[in-house]
Image 1 (cartoon, helix red, strand yellow):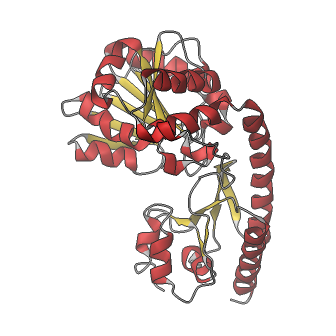
Image 2 (cartoon, rainbow, N blue to C red; image 1 turned 90 degrees about the horizontal axis):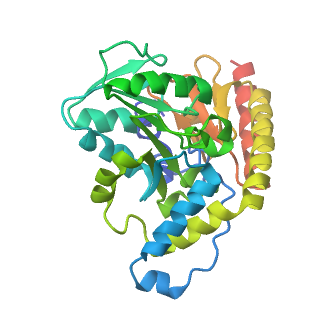
Length: 347
């Protein structure tokens, strides 16, 4: 299959239904390695029936925010507001900014941030690194930390120093920490205070493997929280989501054990890919970015084996692999990598 025919599989991850349509002869069941979602999801506890039957109470929302603060940290004077998935926050940010903003997005990262600002009429520029804080040609800087798909990070002290200078003239720094559960050392939520103009985003879906729950958080200075509360309303997440997310964020033993497990599985994934002739080029403990041998279309090659991986239109030689969910999936990935290595050797 030509790359243009499978272009829809390179736009974002999770499109197993589209892969099934494009590759009807592929091995089944499909293995989805195209997302950075933990395949070992938090075990969902029983949810009381009343959580479905009534609107979430104020104490339910408060308990969720407190659980998030205990898990992530909460700088002094900061509000940690639940949202129905961090994607909603990404879409709201340009609307709350107002005006025709000049926005810089640091590094190659997932497209939702730039798309949201462009749709709101902003001028969006790609940046290779954080800009000079003394410059006056941007109103907003967006940083994903750790980044997706390369896993690049900016150390917390460096980011705080930048933010202190950047926010002095009313400019905003948006830091998406969707993958910071596995790198808490870089999170701004563990800082004593958030500098003015900082908006930090967190997502429950990635590390806890509960993307379908649609729970995230926005961390902003209390002075900036009122407008978010008005936009989000009294019930920003559902009652069942409050119950499940509060339990997950409060389970310190599960969190510690999962961090260790994911680190080990990342090392295993890098070894499997290297054995198949791929070159690991970065990532996090939830995914690995790899480079293909010249001329090989890995999205197509793995799809023919019933394995969906994440390709990128702007860098076709690089692909991203999530972690397999079980030993059967690991064996199929190993077999597909062996076939790839054999095909590359025979070219």
